[in-house]
Length: 192
Image (cartoon, rainbow, N blue to C red):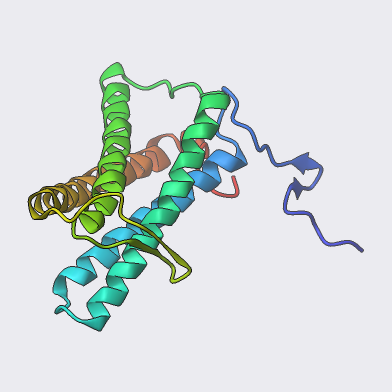
């Protein structure tokens, strides 16, 4: 008896590529990795706010930055994958609901972009390199600049609050689909 392949379900192969009918395994993996990364970053960021300056806060910041760098790699992969893959058809929903859902998606991506830029810039304009899981650092291409540091830090904090709202709206939309149109929710469900 041989072990079951993770790419086989009975006699059906798991679809890696996106089609007009739904997202493939690679897009789903990227989606859920990004979701987990966003949640982890938000929780770490909130935890850091409550910590006094010192080694514990520095360790939390280093982990936050490292997860942010990892999420950047995941999202860069998502962008490359999206350029070369088929976009699934939009669900057959009311036009206003489709526009709202798309606006939330665009808002999430815009917030991610702002966070991915403002995070490193906040560190670099404070005169520090980006630590990556204690393995290496990414040196600052900029000189220390207090005014820019404050601006990037403010953008990062405000955008982290906006992305939380959009994330919750996105989850509520998914729950709505789960109740009203479970077949649509399967487009992004793991192990569908």
